[in-house]
Image (cartoon, rainbow, N blue to C red; front, side):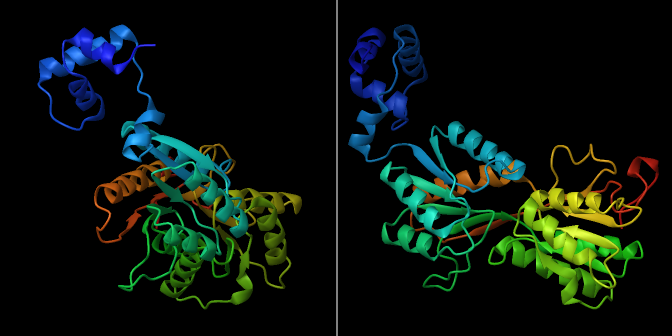
Length: 347
């Protein structure tokens, strides 16, 4: 196996120059840099990452702790994180906390023991243990998708955070359904305690207020952020004396559960009940009817989280920030509108 000394000898430069070229630690003349790269290619030299980490105390790796990796939304986030990390020369270690606070602490500790340089975490609904561990060990971290309302000394958040806008897009779905004449609009919300759930409930209530509709607590149910929970919660809504005529779902997994519940009762969308969804996904356009949805910029969220973490590496004392990315309203036909290609227009 070729060594750095072999590369230096072949390129006619010092070992230090080879190190500067490979690690980007000092500017090198273009022709010298090219000579080193040519020698690396010719000899098949690969960097000894373990040896370098012993010297620099950096592994150039990032830990990613995200639950429900099988969820298409989080899969897209993962793709964004991986692409941005690799582009910056970092490898990725992935763990699934299963949305369980105890397991969350365990996987974060294991990632830390693997000496990752920092972490990107989608926190659980009860992140006290996570916060305590990251703070105690001074681990650079970015919270992803779900925000944690735990103020630091200056009153702001303890850690950098990256997420989508949640309240305004949900309000827009409600306003759209109200504009179509619906007066009883139900919400199948996610797991209590998650910031995404509380923010989408805020958006739901503001959308009702904007449309001049009274809030009815019976029309808000929790689907626990998964398909089975949403199916059960939808059953409760449909069993009301006066059931809703339209539904908003809080994420893509719950949309599947809602559709199952409606199908089990022989109900048709949008003829019997209108439906709008938070979270677009690849096959939403293949359902009949096609699903009107809020599309989150999942890959951009993942990529931005990496960039925010890299900024933290470069400037450990920089102010903590929360980055919110805008969502898109994808107008299809499950809301009861004609297809936009047939002249329908979103309200």
